[in-house]
Image (cartoon, rainbow, N blue to C red; front, side):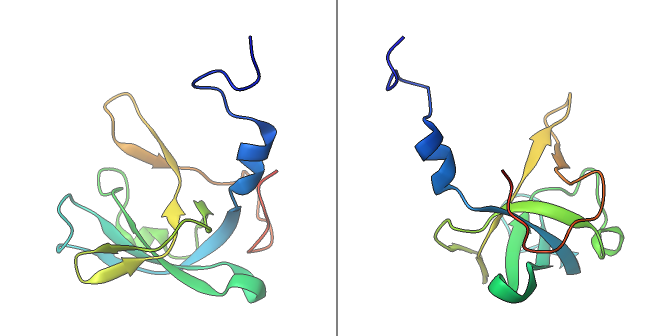
Length: 117
């Protein structure tokens, strides 16, 4: 199979993504979003600071329970305007058996701003 076959990504493609760990410092309902969402403020450490994200995670998470939780996010996509807020990072998750999002997180605490390898 050719290295550039449709649907396949190269290691260079992966390296373009800057995926980092951050800690949720604030979370609140985001009723202005088209689909149910939670607005997150995530601290990515000294290098990147605090960034905002709109995450469609209301099926499994309450805002108060997210504060202090570490999450993974793509930090180098362009910001997107979602209703009245600017979402600066894409918080990562996977679909459960019903299509609802479950957040991705490390199985032990790591420094905020650490990059996924």
